[in-house]
Image (tube, rainbow, N blue to C red; front, side):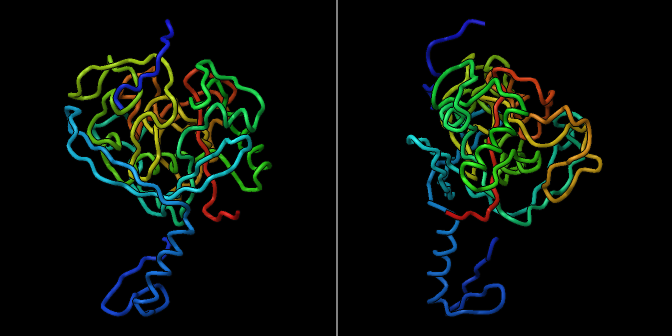
Length: 317
């Protein structure tokens, strides 16, 4: 493959409050509405720093059908030397995991409801090379760049990173379960992509020569792009489709028969084969769908395999 020398950047609950007249209803009783707003703000602040972004939706032809403002919350981990790890608050909730018929194949079925009783934090981006360097002291990536995702890492490497990151920070970091990954990717949507019915190279880094559905062909970068080069989903997460495959904690299963419904990692099966999600720069649009699943040996690596991390919602400074 011929490497190109440019970046393809040219296109770029917790408690539920119900306010009625002078009182706000909260779990456990009513409080005066005058007190509700400060409490609401305190609860919002506990999630982290607010950030605002635009959410893009496209139709079956890949044309923009809507653009609206989104809001999410993040906390930062200081990894030293100016390197930060941004972790986004993912709310508790339920979703239908898997591919509806006729989308995809039976390996992503049966569709089943998964419920997350507690919120959690997920990396705003895939782990970058500068973040990996700050924790592991090296850089295995083929496509070098501080803000590019780290790649050429095995599942075992990713687990080691999480262990060292946990030791460094005093918090428990780990790979996401497959259910956490898809829930976070969909961000409340039910379409093949969180962008809508399809994607375009203006929205996702994939092989634009092989589009999905009625979308037109487009640019093929032939390499990774820096994280955050494309727009986020409604949870404020970037690059959940394309750029790099992302390792998940789960061993591979051929379908979802017997899968847990609480969002936990499915810790049975062929232990040496681990789940990969999200597709990559090197694959067609079909492989970037929210429900698309793949796997490989925990000891293998490739130039389009990386990962992002999750952390429990209980976050102490």
